[in-house]
Amino acid sequence: MTRWRGNPWAVLLTLSLGFFMTLLDLTVVNVAIPSMIDHLGASLDEMLWVINVYILVLASLLIASGRLGDLRGPRTMFIWGVALFTAASITCGLAQDPAQLIAARMAQGLGAAALIPQTMTLIISTFPPQRRGTALGIWGAVAGVATIAGPTLGGLLVSTAGWRWIFFVNVPIGIAVIAMALKLIPNTHQGTRHHLDLPGVALAGATLFSLAFALTEGERYHWNAWIWTLLALSIALLATFLLHQRKAPQPLLPFALFRDRNYTVMSLVSATVQIGMIGLFLPVMLYLQSVLHLSALSAGLTMAPSMLISAALSPLSGRLADRLSGKRILIIGLTLFALGMTWLALTAKASSTPYTLQPPLIAVGLGIGCVFGPMVSIAMHNVDPRMAGAASGVLNTIRQIGTIVGSAAVGALLQNRLETTHNLATALRPTLALPIAAIFLGAAATTLVIHSPRAPFPTRLPSATVDVPGSPRPRRHMEDE
Image (cartoon, rainbow, N blue to C red):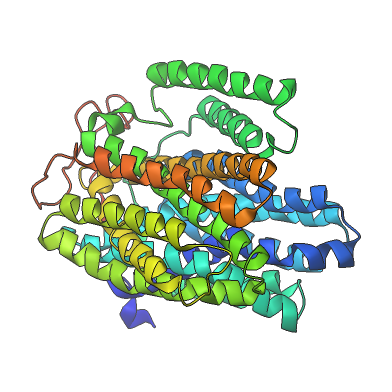
């Protein structure tokens, strides 16, 4: 295996396996809720916390762990993240009561937050600019496959081996990823040591946790005064965080990132894409199971062709973004995604079958396949490599916030429509209007992207103050241990 050390495609395979594991656990637990309630004697409220605590911890710590990867090395952070996630998966599978399971899921979220930003950073440092779009396209395809594999694999494991195996399945993958990372991924050194902005970490974590908790739990607590207080607190904490970052000598969030118009625009687009994704899967999976009376496994298989097409197309769209115009491909992909969902909204009725839904779902898959690779490639094109971890952490955080906002908004809209119509098939069409509008907004925002020359990233961004004052600027290099 040593001869493959530093090989870009071997590194990408390793990173993709770790990334796949963490995204799988965002959706795989949903299918196992009834079984876990029965075997653990848990309430529905406790099981919802099993799902939400993972998202809350993940969203709260992505920025900090991305910056920590810049300062301590992305390879080290990636390996420790995989190790923690794997150990937490064992603890999840062995849990004897809901409290143990919730605590283990918190540890899983911490491991996922540690490793996810490092995947993008390591891709950027490993692949030359002319192949980076292809690599990021594959990275995006992994997200699509994990999204559809969650309910499908979860349904299969729960029905054959039991709910504990939705966690135990991570263990062999995690062990393999750690072994591969130690052998295949070279160590990355920045050349100088910096300090982590601990007050910034605390403020960012508190801001994101308050926002994520309020949006995730708002509907369950009927948007009472405590939820609105948390939302107000998150705004106040955000203002305090931004003021602190302007004065911090080594900020957790370098403002130079947002001086690049493309990065700023793609941050917005990534949030709209996640609203679209959650707006697709949440109501449509309910429709397939509650209206068409499909099992969880059959519903997952109904969605599978669309996601497989997306996974196959993502690397190709990334390669085309390297050679042609990533902006044009992204606009086409977002438009096709929105039009496919519009077609699906018009097609989905109580009398529909899984087969009649395939044409619009395939259109959706074609659109999604043209989104992730170009979107990430455009966002990261001008980012200073020394700030790749921070940029990746912020981008992934905004994506997760988009997921949480989408889940809260789509869930609230669906519930409102059900109270009015008492018919899920009828409520589906106005519910899908929200994610469709979000995706069209993303397509419109993409028109603001400035065409960049296809050249390596610049050595630095103007006004990027990430070094110790008075110290020489380090040269980034790859070094085998």
